[in-house]
Image (tube, rainbow, N blue to C red; front, side, top):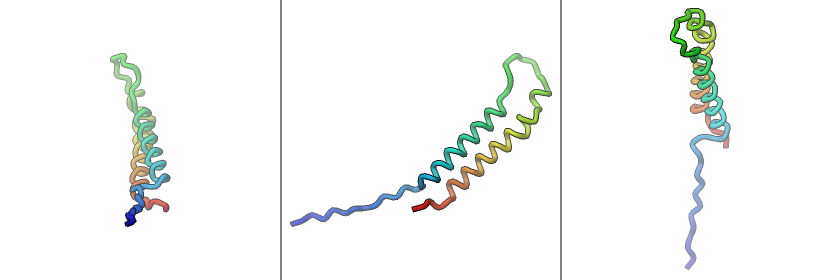
Length: 80
């Protein structure tokens, strides 16, 4: 009597390139939040610092690019 051993190939839900793109997206999101961070905790309100181009425009764009990259990485068909 010989026992049959079933070999099942387990495929990962995502491929290696998908995980790399997801990691890149997370890095972009973190960079965006770091760009948005405030100055020191001096307790004074400086409109030039709070409403700067970096915080109001650049940081949200970087965060959105990271989110778009995350969606692309999830939707992309993994290579076999």
